[in-house]
Length: 295
Image (tube, rainbow, N blue to C red; front, side, top):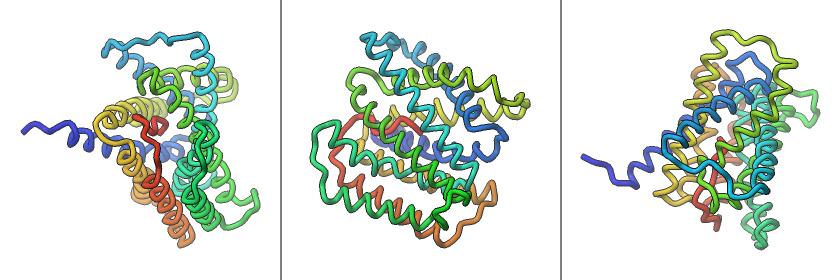
């Protein structure tokens, strides 16, 4: 029996989010610096996405020279976004990393009115206040000497930069496909990080190469393609709600595979953060075709 387009899209988005949930684990499994992990991830993703674009016979050339500069800026933000995410996971736990990173929709609710001349609604302020209270709960101490506090700090920075990427991608999605946007952001991130990787990174082991290929091909390129294809046939709002499962998957995988444990503050704070994100998503008026291509 053939599946209809909507059912197939739902399967694809759930599979994509399931794969997204694994990403954080690589920050713990790989004994490499965040810059090194991100560099190889984006290089491998660039090659994979470039191959997909070639096979699909999509246009690669950008419309204007200005767009190349804009893509370079996005690649720079993209680099910071992922470096701070893996830094958060490495200095604290997967749970702290994915929960604080997942606050990016809250930042979007405040950035969108500025960039798109919209009014900030009372419901958006409530969502942000709830998310902030959740972050406060998961932080045991407001001293940066505490590793959990450090992790939350880097995770929030990752969420903030992720919000900027979401806004800028919203501006460009009418001109370029999601795969094109992902390709150029990965490409320019690769170029930007190249000088830093080979000047300070240790030699890679054969096992590292295998894990990095998995991260770049399966958990980055393939997951992005699945997600992008899915939102062409289902509402962006529904896709965004399903994406809220990403931190849940990440935490469950960390508990099963890495034997991480959760404290009561993390559980309660995490529930508040995720609840505020779902609330913000349900009340969102954002109708963009692609809501998030950054996982």
